[in-house]
Amino acid sequence: MLLMFAIITPMVIGMWKIFKKAGYSGWLCLVPFYNLIVFLKIVGKPRWWALCILSNLLASAYGIAVSKTDAIYYGSSFLLTILVWVFGIWACNMLSKSFGKEEAFTAGIVILPLIFIPILGFGSAKYLGPYGNQELFREYNAADKFDFENDVLA
Image 1 (spheres, one colour):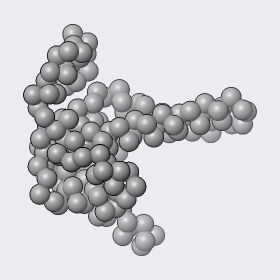
Image 2 (tube, rainbow, N blue to C red):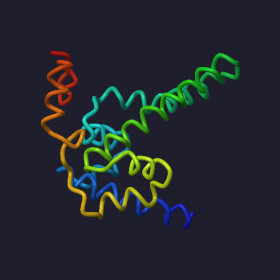
Image 3 (cartoon, rainbow, N blue to C red):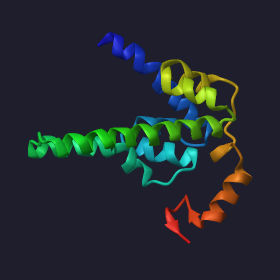
C-alpha cells in the first residue's frame, strides 16, 4: 500500500499543477470522473470522449451485473479496451501539444506517466491552449462547426 501511495502521489501532484497551469483549480484533479471532463476541456476534446474512455469500465460493470461469460461479451470487451487505448493515447498527445511538447513527450506520458506527468506539471512548459495553438484550435472548431465548450453542433 505504501508503494502505491509513493507511485500515485507524484502523479496526482503533477496533475494538480497541470490543472493550475491550464487555469483550473488544482483540486479538480481529485474529483473522480469530473477530472476527466476538465482534462478533456484542457486538451480541447468534447465531453462525449469521456464515455469512450470510460467505456471499458461501463462494459465491465455490465458484465459483472449480468454475469456475462460468453464470447460476444469478451470480444466486445476486447474492442472496447482497444477503443480506450486509442482515445487515451490521443488525449495524452493533445495534452503534450497543449503544453508545446512533441509526440516523443506523448510516448513518455503513455509509457512512464510517473515521470512525465510531474515533468509537465513542475517544468517550465506553459499552457498554450488546446492543440498548443489557440488560433489553430479556433480554425478547427469553426471548420467542423462544433462548439467544444458547449458540446453542440452549430
